[in-house]
Image (cartoon, rainbow, N blue to C red; front, side):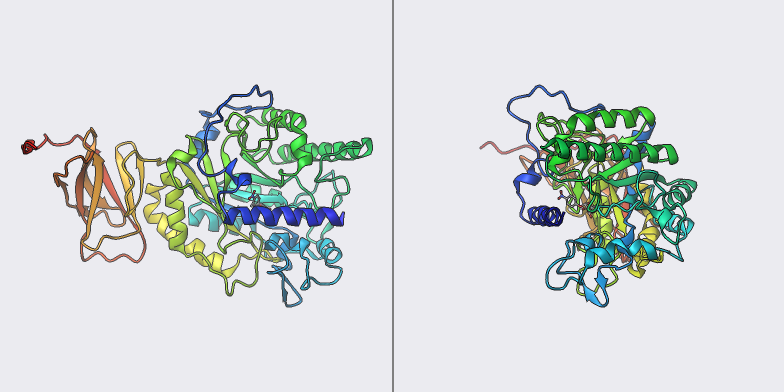
Length: 505
Ligand code: JFZ
């Protein structure tokens, strides 16, 4: 068992290193620019759903814009430290504190951790308050950890002893969360880690001996039972967010996972599952060996964003993001870490939406059920911005206009939104648009006060330029402290100015 833990920790650090040192082979297969394979393979265990699902649930996913992730579990109690000693150098992330090793790790740490459930009693937990906050922030969906890598279930499960029912709190936390958020009109997705650190039936390696196969089969059945149980208990959920699916044992179980995905979808029509759930028979995860997305949306954008729209190949996607550099579970001590600002996060949000993705911000409540004060502050700041500018986010999509250095474009029919992050010193927002465009900027206003802005065609007469320009004047007396949105109507261009004669060369 000990060895396995070291293996996970090692794998995780390798994955983390890969994240820093792109391009890396492990990553190249599921994030970043993708190339189609030269030869197509015969694949039996490919996608179960079409790339362009048009059902209501999937359309809703495409319009969320902003989501909330919550990592909550026993790791919330230590909050990335124990008896004043920080786990920062000894564990990969705060929710990974159980794998704390090296010179700073407390004695018998795993045993201590595995007994934390005896004191899990979040006296301030109020799911309705969380949901109210998420709604005020502008989140349209949320993802909640039902069970992280430690294996502890936040719902009363029939299939394990290591669950919320054994804690002094006793009540079903997953139910409280699902109900409270659904009541506020926020769609709920359940995070589920397949990998478990202290389940004796779990193994990371591919089972070889009969005994190992029997053991791992038991684990697979247990996983299936828990997933069916979640669907049965919480029929309001919209999807699953899978994790801990990278071990060779799971990769080898492609026949089982294929059938399981089918079964889950049959039990719950409209269910949305990301690309992190399973792989094809060649071990290809996220995308099958022919480059086709496995699942309904690309789930590899974790603490990273696509550099170019083309990288996405038209697949649906979302990006999940931490507020500190890394660490999803509660972290008491934020000192010495770069904490993303509201402007940083709004930039990532608009970056995502401008490329047809959703942006999901993570929160890690403490052991009493309180959000970190820094999270409360950011939720409020983002919410205030969304209240004014949400129109540029919800239901908008990627715009075909050439990208702007001033910020990000989003579009809804003939309305174009430019969220300005880099205000030009001359207060002229110059919009480049193809000379062939049939719809060009005709009117503009500031979203925050509906003030009308002057729009004029600037024919700067640059030869060989495929674009022409429209200049929007930002009022000099308008001084924002946040990024702001210019709302632009697109309409038929006025008759073309006479073409000036080129000199004969
Ligand atoms: C996983 C978890 O290990 C982590 O604790 C958190 O829940 C996060 C949302 O998901 O983290 C990962 C998973 C995969 C990679 C990196 C971090 N990866 O493949 O690079």
